Length: 468
Ligand SMILES: [Zn+2]
Image (cartoon, rainbow, N blue to C red):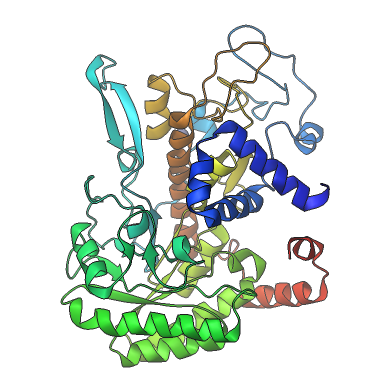
């Protein structure tokens, strides 16, 4: 196998070799393997710690460190030997007032970090499973979680003043003919969904719950299938409304510009005042002008219906955060910073001078104690380091022929995922403060989105042809 497909196959084989258990998951849910590869593919463009480009761009090689500290490449990402504080600075700009657009951190209550000692370093009588939100350094303005990943028997999400968002995880059942929680519960019913939201701790009047919806898959769903999916979303929207009581109930639009327009009208007629724009995550990089127009259209409705609340699902890059803050949507979310820590070993660095504010490194496997990136002092990295885990090491199997101790298990990966949330929140504070202060240097304007659309139409898409 050659070319891109061979590349994907290779990654699939690699994932199985590293974690044979994953085959059980993929057998139960073949779509999850596709999702895994899509996420991996999307994150693959990140620079790796040992990429040729970085080698060429770096200052003259420094001597390879010997001894217990490992400096594997001598490339020197930290050639000036910056301290952790200088390498991972705090957010540079203060927010005088919170912007209208709030970011909700995508999280689930299953993910935990194992602690074996207390804050003073004394061993605990038994290991403690600490919820990952305890390692987020600033209080987010809300969390978003999906019933598909929520464990009702575990701790509820932290309560937030502006409210959390509970959705059904349409992505997890996107290949199914109806909304279904596959791992348990089975097909969703309006009554059953309401019960699950209440069990999850969704508070009336504050938290937002999402009526079960169906994603429309671009280029895969025939017009007839798309129509059926819209009708299913409508059926749920109608049935959920009387059941929701004082809950803030949100409906989701999907599909083409016209289909979204129609869905918005329909939901407004049903009395909805919370609308989420769905299936835009992949579009946000492939067709940003489409996303821009969909957001603009939704905001035109809000101009006529002032109590309308607009959420953008799964669009959160720093550039998009600038745009969404500027346009004034009510909220947006994203999990790529979290997920890519597992799927691509991404380690984010907050760089105030960088036009993207975030620099992404791909941590190569089994590099414990790499001194190419200084140790980070965010709560996640600090706690894991105290436990002997290095968030700069990638999980997997021991491969290092030199026999260095392996130090890249799940704890390191999950710690890095939370680290990425911390770095994202620093960058987010910066970008939002700058947008509010009228600094448009980070802002992508409408005409640039439009120009990008034209370029895209004119360009051949060899990658997409290969994949299709
Ligand atoms: Zn960190």
